[in-house]
Length: 381
Image (tube, rainbow, N blue to C red; front, side, top):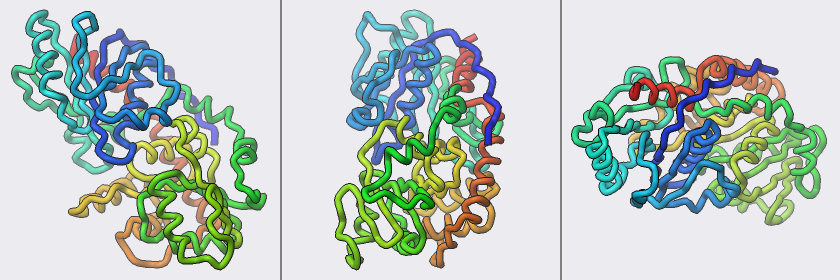
């Protein structure tokens, strides 16, 4: 399905952006912050990304990005460097007190206040529209309006939108799926008619049952490293009826598996474009799977008080997910104990139409960086 390219975002006056990120676990926090920093830089904004753990950037963004500097969390700018004009506190991470004091001191000395934004987690729940753009008192901080502003990503026009590059559709149009699959096939090669599935997950309780289902139909899995690979190997360890685990690949009847290495964000995006079904987790990969326009299944980050249940249902409501996709999500996320629907061509076509319709709705809305730039302009002019 070919979509018209959205209009090019208007140019914005350059301002010094400082994005502060604490890496809690996995790669979601730094992944979102890097995409944000890189897109701001591509639109002419100088960015300093302050983080307590930059190690994942070695493979997420091995080439870096012109205009983005990576700094250690808790550090300070030098007297010769541009002061903060926009501070993005990612996911309520509490910037270091000395860093905030430096921002306040400069604002007091010069009268040039900065805009302080708390970039929140992504959700489709109703409170997002109600809370997006609201201020929180920040007296004495030096921030414009003595306020920290809450900026909520989201799926509707009343939210801050989603991260999306202006050239995304052009990149997808140039993508050669057949050539990509030929380069990334397993040894031995998967059957020509095989469905290709990507797996980026935690430890879904239904994974063993799904792998067993895929043994009866030609299926090739691309399994990402870390928890997804560990969960897959654990699910297969009890079954040694065929090949022993082969390290980078495995084969069980009609099921073949490729265990992938860590890959840059652009390569991850291409993997999603190449697959017939994408199993994703967390926030960043969900957004990228939506842009891919292929059928998707989301494993939401589990919370001890089961608050993620409502968050998952809200997303499926927004997605206008058919009953089969809702049931699959419930079982995949451990909300229900039941048999998984059979993944056949008809089911994938139904799910794909749902995701493509959702992508069309999203493409009609301004992306997150465009909205951020306009939000800052309004607070400073």
